[in-house]
Length: 153
Image 1 (cartoon, rainbow, N blue to C red):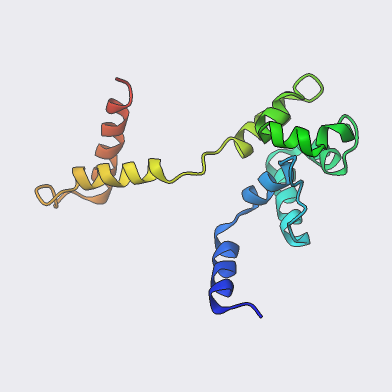
Image 2 (image 1 turned 90 degrees about the vertical axis):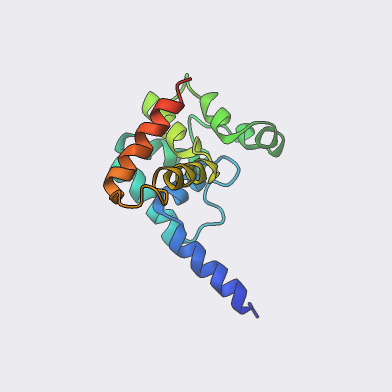
């Protein structure tokens, strides 16, 4: 029987995961939506049909291991050796450029909070005790400018 902690983690996952996460799982050659529920698969495919209409047939063929995808492309050795994005990039010659752009967007995201933590740190620097009368909007603009000016050194 699942514990209370397990239920809390599952509830948190349901609230945190979006259709973009499900689409990324669907487009990952290692998974292709295997561990997703029917509703999660539908949410990912619906996002694809709404925002990336021209890519939907390719995603469906990919999940079915139908043309232009060959079964040998999905062997365990191949999937362990290369990243999902590299796998898709290798198909550039047979796929439309829209599909590659979608893959770069969906699979190329960084799974790290370091950038956000740096922004919060900068916000703390800009909105300090000395400058506590700054409004949230002005402080946000100053943080944006600070980051913009300090990233091009």
